[in-house]
Length: 125
Image 1 (cartoon, one colour):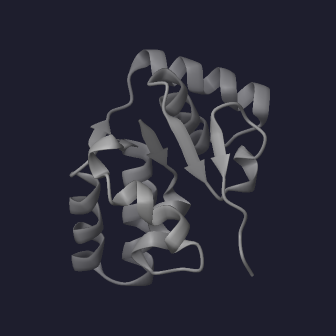
Image 2: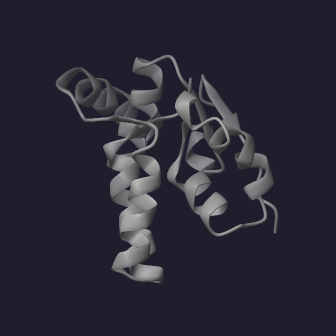
Image 3: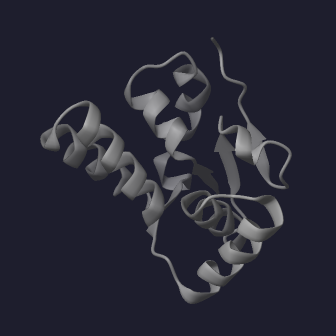
């Protein structure tokens, strides 16, 4: 099971420099979990950069995976991770969700670098 962070969704949807590295995860969408916080971040980003139609289409893609709502156990675990690793609200929920479901977190977000259960894809400039 895998959780692709918001930056990975953006890379893949925009055919970014790392899109080929994220592609294997999206080709097996049934192995992905998507926290609702990733949906929030993705929708917000696409809406800001494009339009509501594209934003809704991006969310429809996330719905093909297993969408995970925020629950009390995940929220409490996220608060612990936020404190321990100085993660933002959304990032701590993403990390806690991956940990809760024993999913590997796939990301290019520097704030996750070095954390247990994270596969970090270095950004290409």
